[in-house]
Length: 353
Image (cartoon, rainbow, N blue to C red; front, side, top):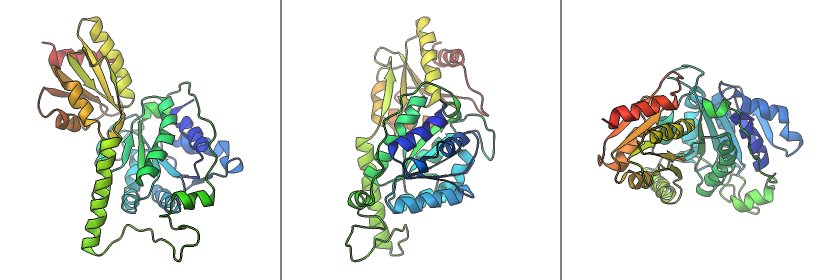
């Protein structure tokens, strides 16, 4: 099935309580699949097409404030519209899952694939000092697997999580293994597991107030310091990555999402010519696997960052290696996807004189 369709199936099987979204290419199949499957008749999951992206993210805010496992999905311009609500949710310390199937920009741009939302996702696209947990799938199977992982991490740390997919992964079709059906949590289980919610624990004298507003400066600093401590904990415990042929490599390619698959073939083509190339694929874009990149770079002659953008992840790679070796970028824009041979040629041109 398509990556977008797989997300819908995985959400139902996770026991998701609610999906609130709005159609936009190239992720519209998420909402369409949920509407076709009608989970409200089987699991009780709410599925609602909101009147706008802004409405959708605020419905997610409300569901999350009640301790529900809720999610939304969109594509790049739609995610831009959701940024205020995402920032509010981060400030209110609410868990939720957000899917962004990236398309080219800026502006309305193109409906073709892109990876140009890296900054928006990893640096906090809304206002304030906050982070999202950002997972970057490179296969349809990972689109499935990251639904449960994203929800679980989001609830563990009480912060929104984002699956940052590109249009290739959202639209391509692959075989997948779907998980078994999890039962949705009862109201009693929600209250027990999430005592911070607006519903609160049963028997509480007053309800919790869910808000990101704090007018007292010292109190606002305390909240920010608490968030920063939580982000430090996430950075210490949750970086994820994948390596391919790194140990004996002379050169390293760093790429995420579908582009990492293209680069794996490019590395094979280079190795066939005697040029030893390894691949490091960040799976969590935030927290970025900085230490893994640093270790993988040791003894290498150069790093090539390949992205469907003008150069965004390369900044984190350069911070990780601290100018210890040359780091070059290769990107295609406007929805053009590089071939493996193209990437291999660029790497050899840049580093193999």
